[in-house]
Amino acid sequence: MADKAQVITITHLEDLVEAGVLLGVCVRIPIPWVSSQEKAVKVLKGAKPSAIPIELAKKFDVILNMKSATKGQFQIPPAFMKTVTKKIE
Image (cartoon, rainbow, N blue to C red; front, side, top):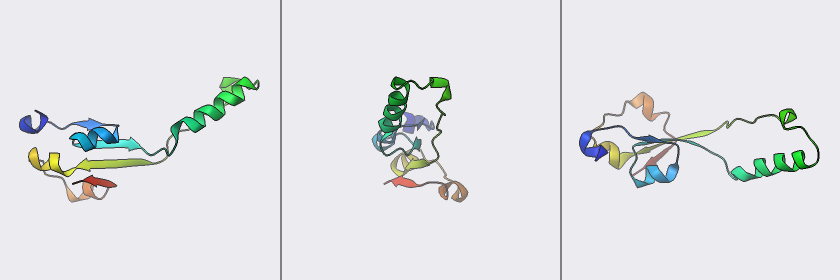
């Protein structure tokens, strides 16, 4: 429906881009629960939660579904294509 209506769809989940969403901006975390587990252990050992630093994701993937871009007749600027780290063909 989005392709027919030429509506841009965006997600933060890579599998949805593979399923047809046009664009994904996805955090690249190899094992996301490891950091949470480490923090939970610190709290259980007595650390104050407010003393544990918040870690922000430092790496993102910009994923573009080329099939959806073609179906929706979207013109992707070359400057934006330079930011794309992964293309779904």
